[in-house]
Length: 361
Length: 257
Image 1: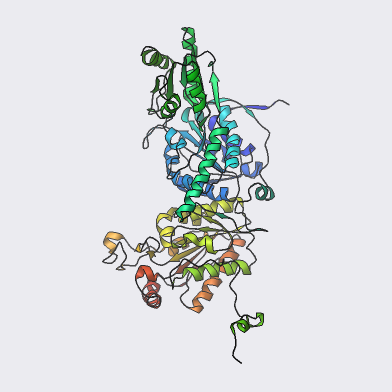
Image 2 (image 1 turned 90 degrees about the horizontal axis):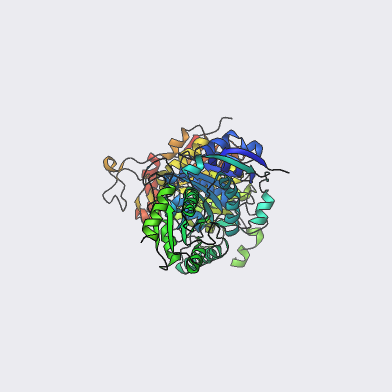
């Protein structure tokens, strides 16, 4: 049977995905440019469609802690926000990572720092991939570059979050949240029953029926035990780094030069690859789909094989470039090119940078 | 013949038994502290109402951060002040469960003011147990939002000057003004009669939660002999003479019949 197609905004697509993926709760707070997520959800009456709860919280601080509660009870809980709101959630995220609870967040990134701008940006890369709050932890971070991926990544993020008991972040931006594209929709799946929750998540605080009590906490005062908890969490991250790296390669097989870009930047870079190839420059694009775990090994392999120079293209002053440089490890030149504060790089300027700074240099 | 320890332990001689919903772990609280009794009252109510299989409690940050070590039900430990948000998050997806928070005055009335007021204002069907000892106990006796005027603490060594530090906050009276709360009361645990009243209040609160009446809110005025730098006996006397006049005991709001 043919799948249902619909023209949707990125923010609407992820909201529709939530209802269809059996999400139990959305707790959020309005902020531009992602307010359509909660607007779409409330308009859809998800309580009637799937039994999903939608609640507007008093702040992002409250919404992330509502997520903690629901996730600790084994429910599929999510929120969405944009950069300043995500900053407010960092405390809660650290606790969620420490208590090893699965949940999904969407950050429709806008330009910062501070109140910044409501235009698209990729300046929250560090915050998202390196932890963001206090303590040693990571968020599993996926970067959609289309409205379809806004839709698809919601379900994938929950699966990864639940597999590893770790919060997952969908790191989008104002362009992908606001633009409209065709989306292929799945058939809805039902939410987990309480029995299924108890079976799938025996650690969840659902009430101590026929078992000892469950405790959800990130506290351990004994340093030897706290170190062990940290070691266990780190072991989990090594496994994630080993097994869950996702990326897409565009014209990389014969590439002498490589662009590394995600999300909106990756779309622009596809155009740069065409422009370069028209001029006879063998340029390829590696698009990390998971930003954490980062496709470091793939970049290292490409650099060892034939790539002579790398440009990391970001809508930031240079954040992902640090991971790219670690992967390249000094073997070939690797530089950052970016626009920021809500500005978007042009494919022509990216090519110009490559020619002047990498090929010419 | 003289009664031996073994005789006393015989079932027919049993007059009182620690509820199974308190673990055997030694309490981390100071001698004379009210927390242990308040924990026990909450757990006795849950046991007597037969709700242990469906109860989820939220522990705060403060002296009772380790409440989950002592309360033998499913528990979640919240970030400082966020317990009502956790409780909301759980109760909305599990409306049939019994959900309570257990919070101190710094947690509930300072850093968690927004979460407290908005959970109460939405009328979340949860029970909030608020232990007010007028001080930050765990961090070493600093000023709390509930510290009385003139009261000494480690950050108000010359007494709380309300011109500089503001006035002690009556959160219980404040939440009673919100339509979302159904039952708001202030109790204590310094004497046997008060303990019984507190237990009754917790029971009522849980009953109202089960009847979906809205947020039930119980303040328990308590002591902090370590933070107040008094003996437990002195602390209780000081509490009666100074805390009770400012924080008078009794029901502030009850549901309409």
